[in-house]
Length: 120
Image (cartoon, rainbow, N blue to C red):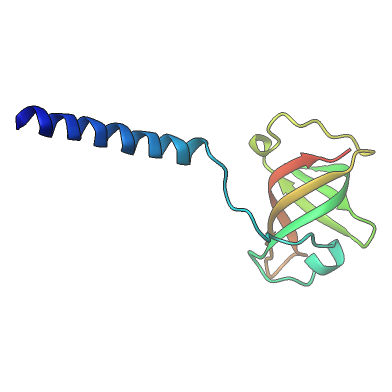
């Protein structure tokens, strides 16, 4: 009986471990996500609203802040050094930025960027 119990415990352990690995290495959500947002729309959004912007980073403003333009307007984006993840961007490149609106009472809205994707 002890051997049978040990066998089932071993099988259960491998099954649970395999399931954990499958979840870790598997995919994620498939379905609608955050729609792309224009800068003109982003400037009107509430604090902490998730956004996806597509356009160009025109220049550095210093202190991890950059001027971003998508043709509908200009907004300041903050990209922490560790959020670049090795992506190198030039002013002529189109990028997709994913983050959230950062709105303080005393300044214009900005975007706190979490992900930078080089589009072209």
